[in-house]
Image (cartoon, rainbow, N blue to C red; front, side, top):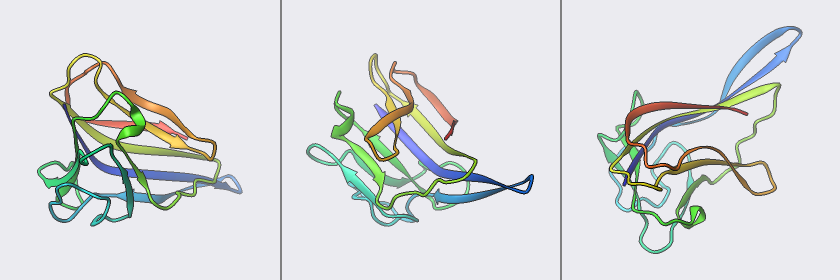
Length: 148
């Protein structure tokens, strides 16, 4: 199973006297050069990488979608336990305002039954799954959007 992740953006909308303004509070275009295994460095933002055993995360060219750095994050061969292999932004992302969203592109290839991924957020009381594919669905680049 292979997952490629590219361009992660958190946007925030604040209303001020009936006029809404959208501000990007976090953007990640992944690494500028290949890193195998990836330990969370070399990107626009610092990342904390958790893995059981050898890290299944890599940064490599041809795995990115859209503009930005030439590399994307790839994940290979995880476990059934979601917390065994994770990446999280090292610094908290402040998301205060009247509304917000997270968007990212994902490519999934070589999946078998009961394999997949989750997008989880932690508002301070532990990680909660917000998006995911856990049925072994293979697809090319696809945009995912989650309203905060």
